Length: 76
Image (cartoon, rainbow, N blue to C red; front, side):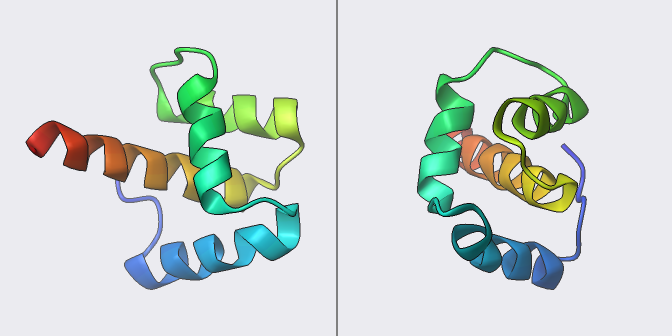
């Protein structure tokens, strides 16, 4: 997992996702969790873009947040 945005940019993108997509970030994270078992970051981003018609930046922010939370769960 690599840092794809500055922390500030990442938080700003996440805050705009509900207004832009009509769905909360938590809903998108569940969608990723329940989606196909893709391994690579860009594969996940491409899947979100193609399957759910998301903008590239929003898809990257969702996958980055998903990866951050998944890594945090592994540490517990």
